[in-house]
Image (cartoon, rainbow, N blue to C red; front, side, top):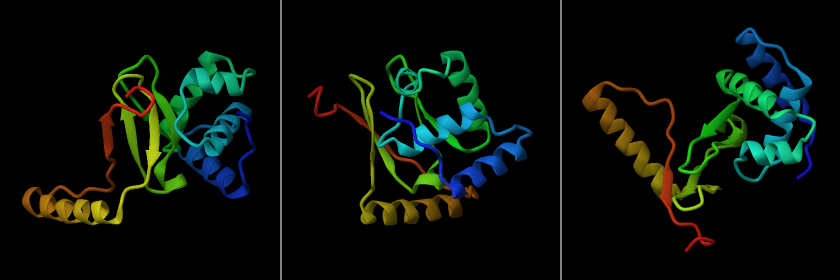
Amino acid sequence: MAATSIDEWLHEVVKDRLHATGQKVTANREALVGLLSAATRPLTIPEIIDARPTIAQSSAYRNLVVLEDAGLVHRIVTNDDFARYELAEDLTGHHHHLICSVCGSVQDVPAPEGLERAVGVATKAIARKTGFRAQHHRIDLVGICQGCN
């Protein structure tokens, strides 16, 4: 898995969000965003370190926390030893996850339009009943992946 540089638009978003939280753009933060941008699925810390061995594990953890606090990265917790990291949904497009309860793998999956419509209707009903205004939603389907089945 090769790390790629981030495009100009993403670089500006990273810079703006980091500055908004009092943080700076660093080479490691850009490398992490570039790696997550190029990934086809959420990555664990070991996968990140394998792809970018010049980034120390402690630095990867620290910088991922900063990127998460800035709204650039989303952390997915599973039942195995490692969380997975991906770019925030507003940077990649709306999707959901399939999470294996055996191996902890996470796969991105687009939701069918019918499901999105049903979630929208349910969200409006919940808002009418409770006054809660949802900003977005996530659906994680937890089960057993094809490899563990």
